[in-house]
Image 1 (cartoon, rainbow, N blue to C red):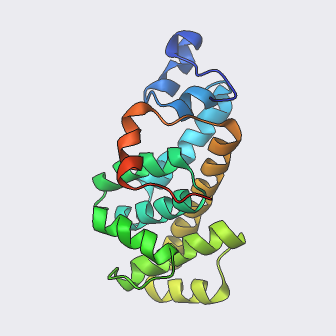
Image 2: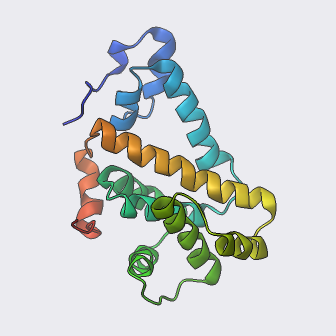
Length: 183
């Protein structure tokens, strides 16, 4: 159960009601602070819709963060969202295998983005080798986009965990298909 009450549009001032146009528990919790919710939403919209980074690569990185953090909320939401950006069930299975150190058929750039996501999530930053390898695939502006997406979703999973945000029932099916590992 979340540590704060989930708000509805009826709880908000008229000017703040659009904060819940996407009526999900994450937004219903963060709406307690409308200024923070707007800032959060602004960066999140850039990462998801304003970036020139390939959407499939971005979603694989986000899934990697959610998987490593054992964030049922983030992972389940991005299994669904990832499908909208070309992430297949085979891609998700490959991401899980990559996490376990197994060889997969993912293309090199996807494996590299997943490595960057693992390093940033587990070690706090990407290694010099990973950065150099990214430079072989991406211009500097796209490296910024890769790191920004990974960093943003690392912040999101920590917020979700700290606030104990509940997975909405309609997203449980994604966790049933791709269960998170037990600790």
